[in-house]
Image (cartoon, rainbow, N blue to C red; front, top):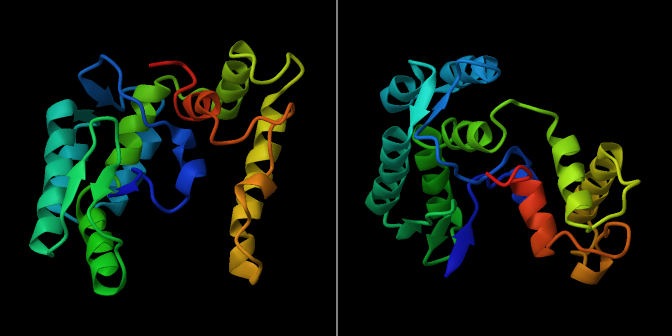
Amino acid sequence: MLRRQILTAGGILSLAIGLAACSSNEASAAGPYAPEFEQARQQAVTDLQRGVLSDGKITDAEFREVRQRYIDCLTDAGIHATARPDGGYDFDTQLVGAQADAERQCAEETTYVIEPLYYAIRTNPQKEDFSALVAECLRTEEVVDSTFTKDDWDQFVNAFSAAQAGESNGNDIPLASELPKLPGGVAMDDPRVQECSTNPLGR
């Protein structure tokens, strides 16, 4: 079974906005995320999206409805998928050609402007410097030493992204062993790195 994360375009690095749930029953733009809500409203293409975003918050019930509408849209296109409780989706088959186009269309009409904002607010409610939060988390988990900074994390992310993108420039797809690692040799797919890079505050 194939899995798809919430944000497909950037793969693992796109998760830096956060993909974890917390105990709050709604995501609100009453504070630092007001500009993001305004941008999302401008990008909305359906009444469903506009309705969810209109009051500056995304309730859990609204979010569940958006995800279900996405699944229903896929079903209508002949694509079987299920939503995972922790975020992302499981697909029965690889999406190519017309099915890939249908999935993209379904996302644009439902989850595209909702999911990233919903999870970002929950994971980083005060909209703090996310790279600084990640670096602090990595230090706390002793993945890196006390000298590791947000700039070090940003440089690592950029190097990792560039290595993964190498194939688009005619290079071979890099092996896991060839991808950049954090100081001390810890890889991006280490569970501690995954947790810190997606949910540094542990929410």
